[in-house]
Image: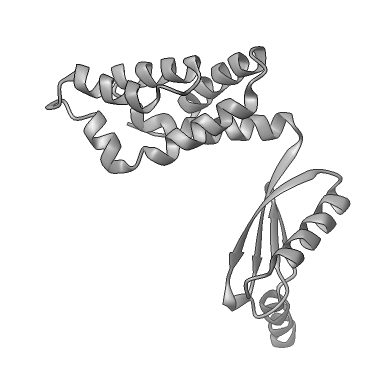
Length: 176
């Protein structure tokens, strides 16, 4: 069974519609993130194990989600009944993506050759937001092979200002 694609997005869209109606989008996002983090592969395996009586699995899930929004609990039960509880992390990601998209937030991945401190991260984000005119939610990665500079992936656009790429380009030019 595929754990990506349009199924998780449809669940996420339905939950976003309900969360918007209830004016509780942040609460739903936190709930889905919390539940997705709790559903490690071994937990999913037990929740989908036909040797464990269904009512025990349902009771365990209900107890774990007792304080979550009613619609989220409903989706959990539906996923459990349909043997698709493993979709929850993908639903949480799709929900977060939809919320970010609606709020005009763009995802970025910034790769540097060394770890950068909080001050440098904030400055990089400020400059990216200023140049793009959009709110950026960034993740940071380290790749020592870059030598210097940085690679910035914003959506499907890659800006490669790494020293490694510049050196490779110079070598190509010298070779030709």
